[in-house]
Image (cartoon, rainbow, N blue to C red; front, side, top):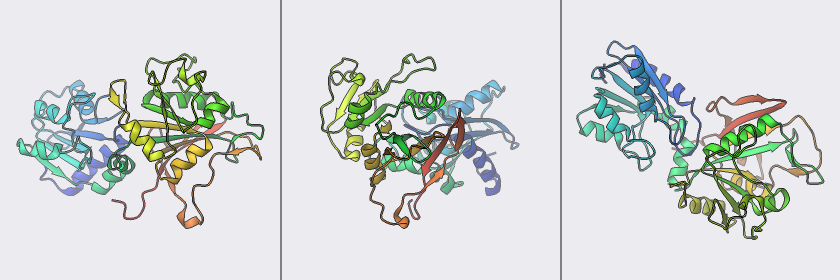
Length: 361
């Protein structure tokens, strides 16, 4: 099939790849979708990346093509929203896979700004038929916050907000467990299972004494646990539940700073489970959340809203420096990871991503 076909044909297949990418979830890795098309233009397999440690989109598509009976890839074209990676990580490099299978042409939406970039150039140098830039803006927008995190040398940040209809995270007497439903809390634990670290402030440790562990639907701790982090200068008590009676460095860490970017960059230089921290879940409280929003360091939000009104009590956010509507940060509904709106028992979970500012390229 190759790269000589009309741009309309290429765009059709790239849109399919972009739709596939949105089936994944955001975090340490970018959203990526891939489509394999045979020489008569028939789609034989579609793949997407499901998160750190899972098959990359290209390998997922190749695996599905093999399962569908494809044995000769020499006359197929691979469409991928992001150029194939060049380095061995938790998964082998996709450029090696493409060379091994003998795929004849590779069409990429956009290049990769991370150290894994350069795949398109590498494949072209080895003799493959390669083109970059089909639906480039759409492909770039798909991961614009992940790209920003790469440029700032920091982990990707997901924020969790569990609140009442009137945006309170605690009642007037300080009680907050539990505002949201059990299903909402289960969803949060599934997110904890896939992030590298969970972060709260010292006040949350004092008031709520959270464990910050990832637990299954029965309440048992899962095998894979995030690094438990406290941000702030106040000392974390040795008796705090999140320490699990272990010294600092044994599954938990205190980030002695009030600067959120500095905290993230410290975490980015930290190894957990043998890999650098690349995805952080910020769970609160108000001061920490406000600091991250004020610094424009929130890349993804899950807002769980429970059907109750508290009137008084602690608000989700404090002052983030917005003095007029024009300067308010704006967000958009995020179609990735199951869609933008999900009903969880009586709660409503809204999945949001920061809107891309004009001229942010």
